[in-house]
Length: 227
Image (cartoon, rainbow, N blue to C red; front, side):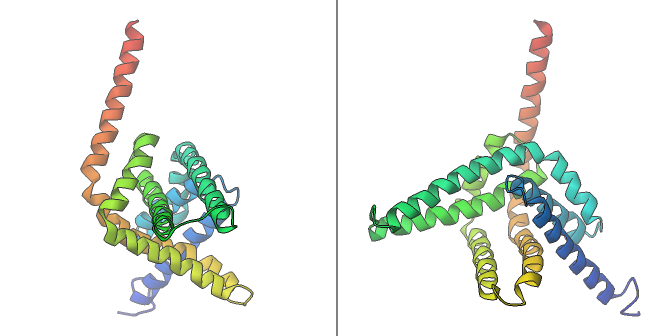
């Protein structure tokens, strides 16, 4: 088999690599308004699983399909996470600028809360990309998953830290621009290897919650019609 043919390993690798990078680029572009970061993250995860992991090879279509479908709900969740993140940032500024004090125990507790917060964000938008459920469930389930699956959660933390360190190291160098383009897609791809096993484990719960919510909506509609 010719390695450089369309069925060859090199072509397939380069195709997957390009799709990974392109999904990362779409994530950057669609995240520019800041408030759309959640919708972009949901779309990026969905497209990465479908187009790169499952070889559907339609990254742009998959990305915007998920982006449009989850835009409103993901944006609401983004606002909530931004408010919580701002509260954490204010608490850190308040205590580390001499206006308060952390003992060692409280300091480590604060660090753990921040790490759980970061993992929860990743799980939440990945979860939303796969299942239809209420915003409440999309926000609360990931907290439990983060705490129940520490091995995978630690992996996500490593990816967060590695991305931050590499970008900080490359800042003011010629590598910063290409790494800025490469890292979002690469991190998203690596996230799928940590998150997919967890999502599959709780698929029945997610589908059950979605079915219950659908049934409740149908019952409410029937009640209103009967009035």
